[in-house]
Amino acid sequence: MKLFYKKHFKAKGFSLTEMSISILVISVVTIMIIKGGDLRNKINDVGNKWATQGLSPGLEPCSDIKINSTSISGYFTNIINSSCLAVFTYDSEEDNGSGQTEYNVQFLQDVKADIIIVAGGGSGGLIATSWEPGGGGAGGLIFENDYSISKGSYNIRVGNGGANSNGKDSEFGNLFTAIGGGMGGNSSGSSSGNGNSGGSGGGGGFRRVGGSGISGQGNSGGSTNNPVSNNGGGGGGSGTSGSIYLGGVGLAEKNGIDFKENFALSPEMNIGHYIAGADKIYFSGGGNAAKSPLSGTNTYGGGGRSRVANSFGSGFSAIPNTGGGGGAPYRNGIPGSGGSGVIILIYEKL
Figure (cartoon, rainbow, N blue to C red):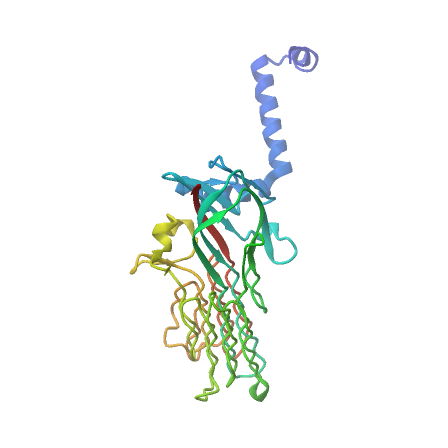
């Protein structure tokens, strides 16, 4: 340091303090040029999502778990009393090429866990005529209580919501796979399509049948062929099936266990769909078709809301990190995309 100062600064009349300030400024400017927007975006993204909760993005305060991933903002862990909470989301910047974000999780000892696994929701149906397509089906939802996880390495993959397609699966190693939600049925008059099958089925297009859901993960999409309706069917949800117009409702609890309380979730985390009046957090709601009587709101569980009558245009997308199905367009435009999935576990040592 002194040799560098003598050679480059002292001869030109710079003091040591002036030299230090100059080097600091040059270093900061160089870092900003090299890292620039990417670094700021990462910091802002992490801060907005997790920092206000006192959580740890990209870090492991829980000593018995190690997480390897190229995503630095897609997951967090935190100590909750004597248990460890770990939440994994879909990070669009770290897609594995199959519509998923992948994490390698190493459990350093056997643990007992409660787990929610939510797949990505399906998109609403495509529109080819003036008739109405179906809403997207919700991503499949799996809930396990007091599940024993053996020491070892597990690949966790969180699925994105579908864009003109079914949603992507979410996987917990070889133990569990939640199936992506089915895309809503297309509309094309007499050639309209049925809703796709999935974790929950997509709603049927004009006068067509809703897709089927996976038993234990979701429900079927709404059908509009019997009784005959000129509208699309809502996508199925993890709690109920879709119907004419309406997406099926998601789940905020299962087997008497409230998700918000059990997993120490809060609205500020943007995990799941918070309903203030009920003080509950829902997952996997079906997407709505157009002209729903409940057009101004998302289906409980993040499903895309409906367009009101005579309000033509593209469908509304589902809420991220919910697995909700995308809303259907009305007369023109594109379908709303499904919501990305999420995997949540809270565990303690055996």
